Length: 546
Image 1 (cartoon, rainbow, N blue to C red):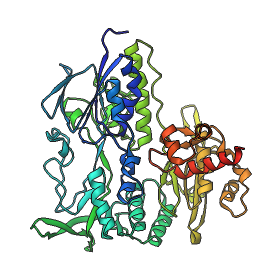
Image 2 (cartoon, one colour; image 1 turned 45 degrees about the horizontal axis):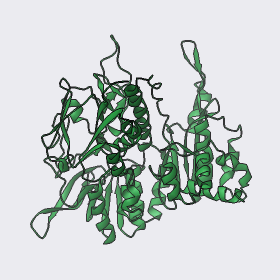
Image 3 (cartoon, rainbow, N blue to C red; image 1 turned 180 degrees about the vertical axis):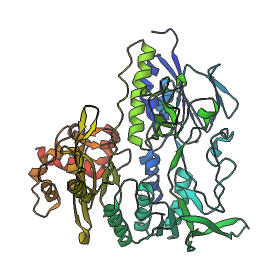
Image 4 (tube, helix red, strand yellow; image 1 turned 60 degrees about the vertical axis):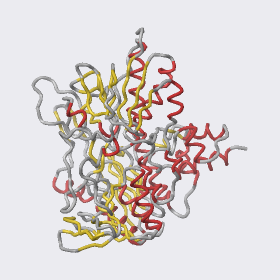
């Protein structure tokens, strides 16, 4: 055990950085670790995933909180908000902040997160941040010298949420550029709240990264039925401005490649995110899509620096003679994996400070389950669902469906089972290998989706007759047949790995609402997609409790 505490500087006070700080508090209180956390925003950490819910009035500010800085300060953590880290001097082991102060360190943890991508549009300045030093003004960390024009926003922080909230409250026309998960959730929620909403995207279907054509078309039709205009096959090229009352340009319309001009009061950019990696790049760390770290979350080029969350790209360190090409992959972009990284790194740092053996390397996450949070539209997907059932048939006809051989390893082929009732908006596709579920997409069938995600989680073999899984959403469903959904080890909250058993225990201790369960177990405090499932578990526990 060292005589002086391990000095840890955490750069980034978002939900992942805050989770790390919270998990380190016992070590801080014990005098093992001295923590300084630096956050560019003046506000304490909050859940950015729920920003859209805040913007449309479905959530309040308090529900977004993920940490109590007062508790951290009381334990001895130095919390520096409203200030940004502008450089890391690796030789001297110091971090310089935008206010001119410096902090010495033994370890640095980069939890800088990601910024919204600004697409290439004539009329909107798009900056490259690769070799640009972080802004000295912490409030301009993402805008730098090119703030977005009036009437254009990217929904990433509280100020953006206020902008969208004003448009929603006034019933204005909102145009969302990009049809990913967050873009679709915002569009559907804003339309339900009374705004006039359109979604512009360049492909045929929304959520193209997660869905296949069948699921995507059903989602697009469901969105139209929810009063969202879905404008497909429309690559955006430029914006048109009008002059505001004070003579400043304001967004007026989006111009697409085919010449159509779509007018709106507010343009919301939902075109993905990019890792904030410029601080790492400027101090000479290895960076690809994100900051490159190994399975112990340690930077390739400096064992004293770690990265977690949306800025971190986990990849094996290259050996002598390996290809020099940048590794494939990217940061997960999801809050659940980021939190698991924070939990693991807290254990590792505590072990180092205590002189104990470090934990086993972090287990790489499987494909994450994606759930669309929208009233009346149930969409669940996980894994690569691009393969079609007809591909199986073609393989059988042409002799392609044979076990793949790699050396002495024989890998069975992937098989597809699918069913669609387009009239009623129902669709399911299951992709298996040797009967075990590898990927799925489910639209309009919430009970089947819950059963399938349970089977995916457990790596269980599907029934030989796949059609039995469709009966869960039938009118004559027997609740007893879905009892496994309430098994104690079944995961309810994927972001925080909270099981049915943990929720049942909390409920028996008096936590009787979804909000109370969130405070007791953290379930439902990530993406929020599991809140309905938590409610079902609470109902189930109430029935069983005398």
